[in-house]
Each structure stands twice: as C-alpha cells, then as structure tokens.
Image (cartoon, rainbow, N blue to C red):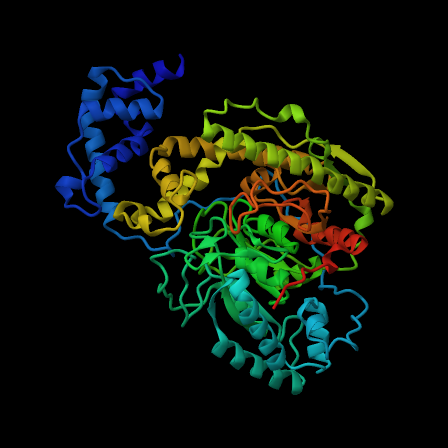
Length: 620
C-alpha cells in the first residue's frame, strides 16, 4: 500500500484530517479580513473547497466524499485551536516536549577536575597605562591586572563605557547602556578584591549581553520594532551567574530583529574591519563590540549560525556550546530544540573561562542536563586526540559549480546569479586560508583523518526551526504586528512565519524523526575522530546545529589586497560582504558535550597561528 492509498484508507477513521491542519489554518488565516476580528470573521466556516486547497498544500489527495466526512473533525480541531490561542502563552512557556540530542547508549565524556588555567600568569607589567592595550587585552590578562590591583574595575568599566560611546555612532552596537548597574558592580568588585575576596577569573571584568537576555530594570528589546519598551522582572540565568562571578554588565548589545541578521530598529550593526559592511548576525553587537575593543567578552546566541557568522565577519572567537549545556532561561525563544547561548571573546581560553561560569542546570530549562559538565583544562594533552577534517570542503570550489548565466532581460535572475558568482569567487579565494590551516596543523604534528559529513536532507529538517519560531511568535503574526519589523522581504521573519503556518504537525514530527537519524549518524562519525576541522561556511553549520554538537570558531587570517571585491560597496548594503582587509575563520567541531576538549584543541591551533592578536584600526 502506497502513501496515498494509506491516507485514503485512514480518512474514514478521521486520521487524515490530522495531516494538514497547518495548511488549512493558514488558508483560514489568509481569509480573515482584520488583524483581530471577532470569532465569526476570524474563523469562517470550513468548507469542502478549503479542504481541497489545504490538501494540495499538504501534498495529499482527497475525494469529495472524504472531504465531506472530514468537515466536522477539522472544524472541531479549529475550535480547539481557538481555546489554546486564548491562553496568551508568553515567551517563558516552553513546550512540554524536551529535545534531547543524545543518541542511543550515549555516555557523557569524562571531564578533568578541577579546572586548570594556563600554568604561567600573563605578563601585564607594561599594560596598565596604555588604554589601547587594555582595551584589547584578553580576559585572562585583565583578570591578572585586577587581581594584582594594577587597575581597578571602576576604571576598567569607565574605559569600556567610554569606548562604547565613542564607537557606537560608527558601529551601532549598543541598544541600552546599563551604566548605573555596572558602576555599582565595579565598585563592589574593587572592595572585594581589596579585601582579599577575589573570585577569579571574571571578577571585575566588564561584559555585554545580547539584547535577547532579560535584565531586571532594563528593556529587553529583541532588536525589534514594537518591542522597544518590553521589560521582564527577572534576570536571565546567564546574567545572574555572571553577576555571581563578579563580572560587570556594561551594556545590552544589538541583534538583528528577533535574532535574524544585523539589522535592528536602531540601524545596521557594522563590521569594525570595514564599517561600510554589516557585522552579520544575529549576535551582531556582541561580536562587533568585542572586535572593536569595547568589551572584554560578550554573550551571544546561536540557532543557525548566529555566533559563528558574526564571529567570522568581525574576526573574533566564538564558542557555540553543545545543546543543553547552558540554560536559556530568560532568553528570547526562537527554536526550543535548537537555541544555544555561548560566549564571544578574543581567544578560546577567554570563551572557556566564561563557559565555565555559564554551564549547568538551573532547574528551569529542562534541556540542560545534570550529568554533563564543562571543566576547562588549558594544559590538556591535545596531541592524543584523533583529528578529522571535512575533506570535501577543503577542495577548491570549481567554476563549474556556477549556475548557467540567465538572460539579460531577467534582472531578478541576473542579480541572483551575480550574487552566486561573487560568493563562489570569495570561496575560491578563501580556500587558500582553509588549506593553510591544514598545513599549520600538520606542522603541529597533527595526523589529519579525512571524514565525510553524513548526507541527509538537512535543509528539509531545518523547517522545525521555522515551525517553532512561528509558534514562539504566533500572536505577532496573527495580530499583524509583524508589519512593524524592519525586514519585510521574502527571507525575513514575517514571511517565514507565515509560510511555517502551512507546515503540518505530522510533518514536524517526521522531520524530528529524520533528525534522530542525523543524530545517530553524527554519533557514528565521532566514534572515528574526536575533533573535526572544517571551513566555517557550508552544510556543517546546519548539521551540527540540528544535532547539538559544539563548535569553536577562530580567526584564520585577513584577506589580502588581491581578494575579490564585494558584489556591492554601497554603505550598509547586504551584498557588501568580504573583500580586501576583512577576516576569515576556521571552525573546530567536537563530540556531544565534549566542549572542553575541542576548546583545548582550538586553543592550541590559535596559539600556533596567532591570528587572535589582530584587531581592527578604528577612527575616532
């Protein structure tokens, strides 16, 4: 029996009606004449013609008799939906289903204990009187200066606040300053350190929070028009934990509206290496400010590239942790089964020191497990690790990959083709940096093992993100308030959320089942290697975000004067990407909850390459 025959056989039992409610409800929504009409207008009578159209969207066939038989059942489903919608579910309410990225028979990796810092304290004797050196110092260096009282937290906080205000007009990375809170925290840190109560390693160190993290007493805007005055009464778990570690929150940083891109209600956040370019996103302000020496570190989030992409664009280091390692309590939900919070800093060890503070269950975010840990060991013997490399992605992109050139009289197709051509040209150029990374690893006596990422319909699985996002912002769509958002193009959230309403619950479950096969396939891959080296761009990002694996993104050089120019050099244009003088990156992937070991290996590469020491030269 094929699928259509099975559906026909099941329809008499009312089973088929559950296969396409998303499509039907989308059609009903489209027929509504007002954003918030009364019940009779918002939910018009379900007709056989509606079911026929919905069935076509869902990819099934129904006879007239089957449609007639389904009418009562589908109407009852729709009436039940009205009751759920009337509950006004807020952002703090998570689904009863909890995503678990662990494959069958999974045992968490053992972690070294206790935590180990680098054995030698950094030499900071000549830094304390030079603002530029302090601004671009690592967390470890700042911690040593604070511990030795060569600088006070109050002075350090004032320095970073001044730099944020100096460069924000160019870079547009601050949404809200938290100066009063910061100065109180800094003064308290100085008193404690002077009294011998040094908490290390973040005590007195200023940082910034991506503005999807709630901070009591301040707006949490999510970067979106219509949410500028939104406030929550409690601090996010990660904010509270950094408070307890003595870190000093100086500002809430920009993100693209509802965690997409770098365009927010205050403008487009810029790349400090080329201020005519966007910083990428959605952790736009976090990466830009760290890159510009305006924060010691920042917290970002990633659902599908939102730490990796701006870290690459801005030339900083990002650590996207395993799914379920850091609580997301108090953070804007976009995809409950994919959202992750992680640090952005100047170097891997800085990220690791921050992640040490962030990780661990809080009893609220039920995805965070009690049986996994992150214990930083800077002296870990990374040479015993088996290191794979994503072999196909290190091959030079071929000209033959470029689509055939469209006719000149089709400007839309021509624009897409030119964009594709520019992207391939940049990938071909950047391939030299990818290959140089492999050569440096070989000089480090690393024996590289070629590996192949599992080939599954990963793009199709990503629809779970869009469906969950549409649920998280259900009322935004139904009220019509999505019209206030900056982005209104085909690929922006308003249209994406509307499209997701045509996705059925059954297909969502099937995508999650396919995702389980992907998790199992990745578990098999990580039986053969401990770490995978890969270019940051490409399918690996989608795969590992779906399977929950950790990634460390590190700077890997600066494009030369011979680099292909951007498709556009217009100020703030989305096609103004790459070009001479802009950073590239390389990514290290680790096994599930093996964040500490992949970070230790990435740190070894970073120390050998030295690219983390580069920073942009800004005017002003």
